[in-house]
Structures are given as C-alpha cells and as structure tokens.
Length: 510
Image (cartoon, rainbow, N blue to C red):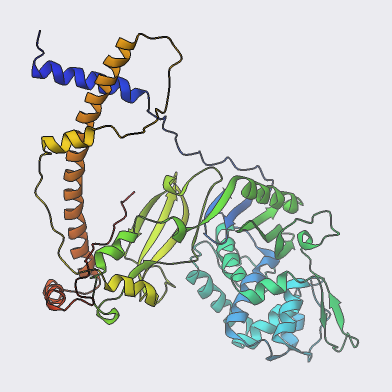
C-alpha cells in the first residue's frame, strides 16, 4: 500500500527524531556565582584590580571612618601633581597639627625632605606629619588639599566619601565606603611608583634634626613580611589604619596567575588580616582572569562592516577592540557564558580614540569592560584589507534546492568509518531498513539545512548591511559620501590584473 505524502513526511520526521536522539548532547548551565566567605569586619570588598569586577561584597556602600588608609588617596594625588625630587619643607602646622601619640617619623619643623622621602615616610611609617607636609606642598594648605582629594575621588567614581584631611585622623566629616576605597586603591596600584613604595620592605630616610643619623623605616602592613605570621604569598602591599572610632582598616593588593586582587576592610575588630586572607583565598580559588581581546567575537564584525575594503588607510579609520583589558569569571565558566552591552555614552577618562564602551555581565555581576577604538591598524593588516573589493552586499533571492543537488549531497562518502557499533545480534534485514531510513533522513535533513542556511545567510546579509549603514552614520560618514567611495572603488584599476576578488570571511555573532 502506497504511503500518502503526509504519511511519508510523518515517517521521515519520526525517523529523524529517533536518529537525532542518538547524537544529542546535554546542555549545561553556566556555573553559579561562588558563595563568598564570612568576615568579621563591618564592611569589606574584594575586587579584581585589572577588570574592576566585584567578587565579594559586604556593606560596600555603608560609610565608615577610614583612618590611615586615607593616605592612599593622598599619595596618588601627590604622584600625579608633584615631581619626586621636589623639596618639601615641614611647617609648624604640618608637625604639630596632629593627634597626640599618632603615627609619626620623628620629624621637626624646618626639616627638608624630598617628595619621595615624604611618600615613603607616609606610606611605610604612616607618618601624619609627612601627610600634612605633602598636602601643604601641593596645595598650600591641608584644607585646599582636601578639596583636591574630594575632586579626585569624584573623578574615580566614588559616591559615598568625603575627605577632610590628608592623614585620616578622626573627623566627623571624614568618611568613606569599602566600594570607594576599592576604586581609589585600584587607581593607586596602577601607578608603578605607588606600587613600588608600598611593596618596599625598608627605606632609609636622610638625616633630620631629631634623626641626625637618618632613620630606617619599615612597612606596617604585615602581609608582605615573610617573617610575619600574617604573611601572604603574592601580597604586593597596601596600607593599614587604626583609630578608636575607625577600628582596624586595611587595604591590600595581591597578584597571582594574572589576577590582581584588592581587598578593603573597614571597621574591623582585630581580625582585619584574617578577613583579608579569607577574601583573597576566595578570589584566587574561585575565579580566573581572561584577556577580552583573545575571546571577543561579537563586535569584530563591526570592523568588517566598516572596512570599505580597498580604500587607502586615510580614507577610513578602523574600529577595533581595545587590548590589555580583562574579564573575571568563575573558574569553570567560559567567556561565552557572559552577556555584553554596548554604549556610546563614554565614561570619564575614556581613551582619546574611543568610539563605544562595552560592558560584560555574568549572572548580574559586572565582570569586565572594554572600549571600541577608532584608529588605524598595523600596516600588514591594512594591506590585506586593501585587497578586498568594495561592494554593496548582494542579497540573493531564496532558491529551492535542486533534486540533483540533493542526490549529490546525500551520497555517502567512501571509506567512512561508523562512529558507533551495536554489540547486539540483530538480523541483517533490520540493518538494511535502518540504513535506508538513515539515508532518507539524512537526505531530507541536508535539503532542509541547506534551504534554511540560505535563508539565514540572506537575513544576516540584510542585517549586516543595516548595521553598517548605521555605524557609518555614527562615525560621521553620510550616505552620499559612502556612495561616492563605492563609485571610486568600482572605477579603480585592480592592483593585480586578473586577481580574484574575495569577500572577507565574516565571523558569526554569538
């Protein structure tokens, strides 16, 4: 009895479903964001200093007194505004406008040290008179310097802080948050001189009035001292702080395996090193850092859409992703597990040639960011682009596959080795039926896939053309100018006679 067309179609799909079930792979969900440690301090945060990703947070926007970790911001401002060999003269106010028995380097009014000497005294010995002297040197008064501190904090994205002095001594109007201190520390550790100062194990100050033979000073941060029980392998440095109102405060940076982790502890209760170690261990054990440019494919087609291939370099700049930007993910997660968004509203401090800002998200966590830049690529890359012809994308009409194509596609390849073999004893006739069903299913499947691929490619070409037109407008090229460039290319003589023109291979969007 002959099967109707409907029944034949149903039989085909049943066979195809049965056969495809043999090869289906289970879909795995992205790993969950790791649960963080428990810390005793009132506020704490762990970030990756390279990507800016927040890996752990506890009360990160609550306001606390920072104590001497304030000096990180003071040092950063001094490094950005003063030369290291400038001479600082200690005033009466700088030496004596401090709390009794507060940290000092035994300096006296009239002492003269370089900016570099003062920075070491302030960061290693936590000398409050050195902080005051540096502030007066840079801004004439500690009050004026406080205005510089607040302006700098605002430029770094701080929203919870107000600074009233350069040292961090008690003041009701002097406060910060774990989030803001992490931003400040991230900026500071990007300064090579700052990182060198805070990682130094000792420094010799020159002779002064009270120290005629000079003074050797050592860092207060115990996690960089190998003979300390609080030593932490990979610790780069940081800053300690303590007042009766602030409690223990601590900022620490440690580097391992391409990750630069930064922790902040606020209002600690003598467990600041324990809390820091717990956060650091959590970060290094549960996360990894990736170079964005090594994995990013979503936005590389922008370059293809805007290439205007064949034109000289000066005719159109190239858009490309920024290098040396990183993303931080759970250790078993993949770059493809992230979602990205693009914005043309650029943040403060963007590179000069930035065209857009890309941010990456993982389960609600911002894990990294990068820029799209406008600028010429390397000459060898441009030369290869110049050989590709400039043309509007051709949008072919959808065509039905021919029977001859189907028979050719469905023909089995010679020498093919089966990927699987049953161990059961099954009659040969059944194998013949199964092979016939498989061949029929494969033939129908190939036809179906070819047809849909052609439809999808047609839709993708239309989408790419629309995106290219929009992006050309975004970078200031009008449709008329674009058409003129097209006409110039069409009338231009090929570089090599008879050379075959090829369309650049485009990467699929993910």
